[in-house]
Length: 319
Ligand SMILES: C[S@@+](CC[C@H](N)C(=O)[O-])C[C@H]1O[C@@H](n2cnc3c(N)ncnc32)[C@H](O)[C@@H]1O
Image 1 (cartoon, rainbow, N blue to C red):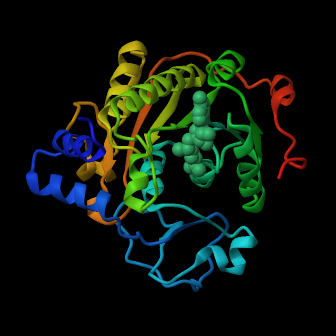
Image 2 (spheres, helix red, strand yellow):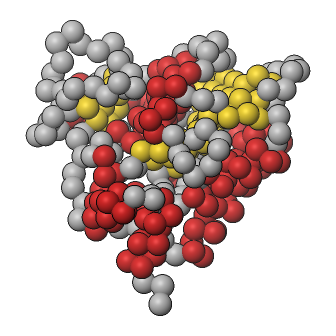
């Protein structure tokens, strides 16, 4: 019988050769422990931090702080004033691939944007001329817009369209396309949240097929010499390494970029450079990330603001 615990055991054996690692992985998913809170400074960081902070990881950017136990950043007055955004440390890990992108990126497109953490991270790192954040689920648009507004993320627009429509509307236009893909959410268990059916092969298959569709449409939006960043917060190879291998077969102009600061996190489940954080390391619930570069030469197609203005969401009318 395919019980959740059997499926979890099976997954642990696929992910780790070492039995001790397998056991630790299963243990943190079945007996979750909290992770330190974490913030991204959107505005200039105060000289004296209002929080007690943990020693930074080697790859952690200067505008991120991992806070000590007991700190409640969401309740601090600077939060409401938009000084910082609260996010998981796993999200920081996943977005760290963006630190290798040259800062000349003009247009950044976030395909799966709500509630906005990766959009804000990309804006902070790249200072684009235009950030386009897309969220296809209508009821998630409000929190995306309110976070972008609260943190003064400008110039930015929000849209809410299927990836296939966007691929047709703005091909070869964006210097960076971010795909923080919807997934089975297995890492939610490491945070003590629920993710029913997340280890079931049918759910994993369905999710992987959706991810392939989204990443293929997203690849079409990447400008020549631009970048495609793919990340998830789940562990199944079908939703991670296998999606990347699938994309690279179909879009051979894309090449995976090595991220030297994440070298020790390189996945051994593929020869393509991709990176994983696991919950048993104690930093975050887990993430998968990779960065691809479109090696094609050619002209970048400018985003037609007239066309874009027909679909963007009025940021003043949604909350
Ligand atoms: C992992 S979350 C994104 C988190 C966000 N990037 C952040 O850092 O705050 C995935 C998002 O993809 C959206 N999504 C679901 N189905 C989608 C689809 N078919 N195409 C694009 N996005 C989709 C979900 O609504 C969800 O907001």
